[in-house]
Length: 471
Image (cartoon, one colour):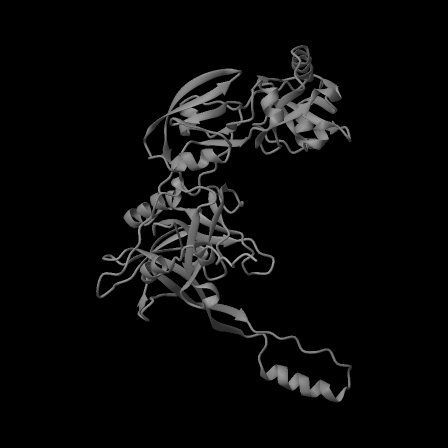
């Protein structure tokens, strides 16, 4: 009988411990507690009882005594996490939603110290906030690392205050990068399966060198607890925002002045592109940087400041992170040709409305409206009667859609009566005959879809690819 062989010692020990790392970093992580006074009506409805019931008089007397309709102030408290990035100045980073609306903010440290915190600046778009405390001695601080260097599968560690329990350490891996969860215009989250729960918001996500590569900010969970899908703001995104909030108390982002949409496979085919990439310019803001540089609706931005624009959602982040006043080289595809444009970025104002401007052309009043059916749409020249019928603003010009045939590609793409066709395949159209001519030309060229530039009655524009097979 063979002798028993002991199990391999290394295999029996399991993963390498992160105890030393957690012990070293724990003092730099703080629990954030906030208090807020809110006004509300404390009204509990009186139970319904039959008239004449012996309980009716009792309930009426009790509920009248409680003053159910009276406004009452009450204190609401919440908990989150944060971390120190400058121990000498007492600078703490957390999420904006952790401290939003708070009357009082307290940073609670590992050793039991509690310090009142003031807000230096916040940024709703990235959900970041910078706080400041006044320590008696320099605090333990951590550094923001290089989030671009992490890879899917790398180990990460989160420290925070889940459910108000205090300093809690969880470990997992980077599950994905560049996640868009539709929380803001600059979504670029790190996804992790390290347990992130309520109260972890604003806490750090560390790499195994002890650098902060993310700020934990959101979870997906039907139950409210961790199911292994948490999201952190990358350190690269946070670094510039934090620097600006510390220096100016606000963010100062670059502004290009365009409204963009995704380049789908259909749009790419209709434009003669080999692959779907870049950001399609649907509109250009009057007197904005792009307008001054002669960027045009229908251009596809494929490179910005030396960086390839793979998808539409990458462009807003690239622009926002670029210095105001910088001359940026933008490469666009225009009617199948690459065009290089130099754009001087301006500052994005919070109230800036980025939309395409509409040009005004006089419409003849006495000419009968020309009508025809193209691509499952009934089209007509835009005259005063149709402008009034569909409430189309004066600045909107082109060919109006009066009906859309059910079951067609146009209906599938949500083209509706009252939409106005301004261009077909990036060529301006003024009459239904112009639309027909452009569609026939596309058919001769072997194109499977026609790219329409549509304006709604208020003038907002979008590109829509409609299949030519329906014709």
